[in-house]
Image 1 (cartoon, rainbow, N blue to C red):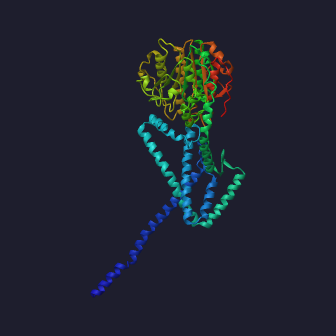
Image 2: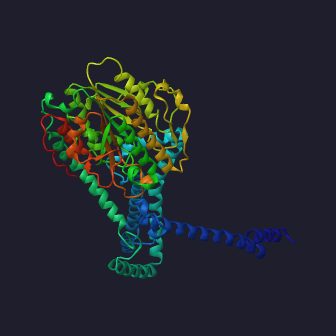
Image 3: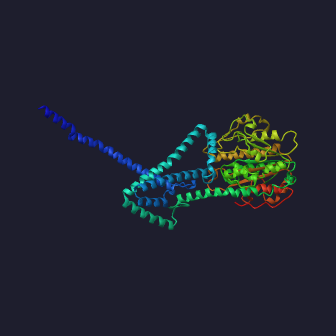
Length: 570
């Protein structure tokens, strides 16, 4: 063979693979191509599932059932029709924007689910961002800062990733629609007809959830309306703050029916109507009945009713502000506006009428300038109380310790004035996993004694833990009155709000029990026309007032110039 023949042969071999080599290459390409097709189909299926789930995800926890996802969302049909009608680039832009907005709607739904589960209401787009700090602090106290930080990072990742994923999924599905335009048009027309028929017959799989769905647009409408309402509420609240018939009442006419009495207003965390009405909490009701009997034997009489709190599951400060100011404070915007106003509070009334006014808040761990607004001459936060014992879940100290410390600092020894105090008790605060036991008042000292007799409850048994927590605080207050109450002691016990829906179930009322206890018959005579029931266990027939009516009724009943309380409307 010549050199030229050898070169030609080599060249031919290199530039044209043999039949065996070609077959081998084809056999390698086929699995790769097959894997790509399978992967592409999987991604498409996931995109369809994500978009449909985004449209049909309920925003209320009691509707989180598999059947709730079996709906035909009208918004999805309209979006598909628009994408089919648009040309290339505008279609991609609309798909991306619609997907991004859909992701944001899903985030709002998730926020609603969380807030309905914990506070019994939807997420407020204007005001609830400030609660994120509170939520993180609660998690840190309950499960530790590292775990809380990990959860917070996860939440941020979801907030960023979800709108991006829904946008990418919508763009992908828009390409699929156009690629199969004829089939997509036929399917879409059929679904529109089915949706119309289901809408006419109001078809449902899950109670309260229509199969012919418009939920996404309804949620957007409700939240936009709420934003508008929040903006308009600022002016309305200014008018409410300025209307106050007690501000100009002379000091010598205020609270004349309580002169010389120590008046203690004890807010009991998460003490709601369910605690005195749910059969599962019958032990709480027995405790109240037995306590009322013991106190009656010691000379105390008690009357009970209900107030409707402005909040459920949390936001105790809103309830405190409502009761003490006589204004309906159901959100942080109103709360901030209240604190910036010169509203005449119950504490100011007592201070002006000659009482030493005191605030005791063991859960506060820093300076609390709000105390001046409420008219408190002396304020005790957690560190001020000198506790050295163990912590109890969210509660930094047992309520018995806080009450005992207040008693020895403010009610023992020579005094030139009676005391009025707000006691913000927190042993019944969620998560109810560690609850103290009542100890002898003489043994409390710096709190080390509370290391004994701790009642532990697994987090999964929330209702049991709640029962222990509320029982402990109520038992503490009854014991305090038995031990340290006298002829000049008046005690008001009031719940701040119902516990979270995990305890009460969905759609529970916002009512909380309220009790007034005193030895002096003249005190109880002043509230005879309130219609409150004897004892400490109000039943279904007990009167229910909005919480913001209490200040006016209280000042009217115990003042020297009785007047009809103003009507309150929501």
